[in-house]
Length: 217
Image 1 (tube, rainbow, N blue to C red):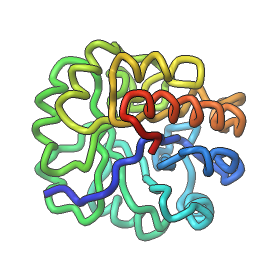
Image 2: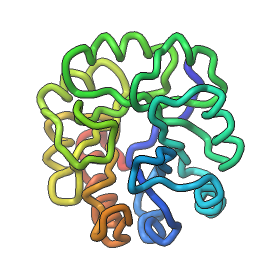
Image 3: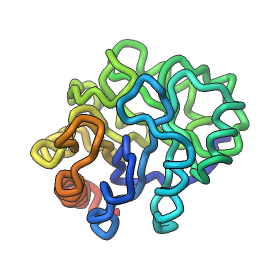
């Protein structure tokens, strides 16, 4: 069975400093993602991630985002940073993660084979992140919303892919996901979150999700 966690409604990924999210912490931000992938401009080392995680309120879920990771490396990063969950991108196989001690968010490309991938991970992942099919994450490319809506009916999903304050309300109204996740479009300088953009996104997302689910958590 999947490790249990209260799946967040609003997640911001690719955070590299506490100041990037400080304004949003009281506005409905439910999870923060830290990228452990050296090819990404948002990569952070374990010491940096640990410093930011130490300042997060307990209700905010800290997530290490990995591409093609092994269980051993995931364990190592969780221990080193104090994060409470992992997000698996890339070619991870469900069978290799059965019984993992920490909650798993599994990234699902919104494309061919997505239903089968959700089914394979259903009893292993705590939830899914629906994202663009042609990058491991953080590209800022939007997804096919109608296709994402079909997938969001199958399991608890966070909608990702090119979201910001200007488009999240429309995307949520179409897809009706459990929650949302954003990264690239919340930056003024590539790789560095703009606190005002983050705040605006979190507020807009909370409003949109409250309209769909009747609450803003």
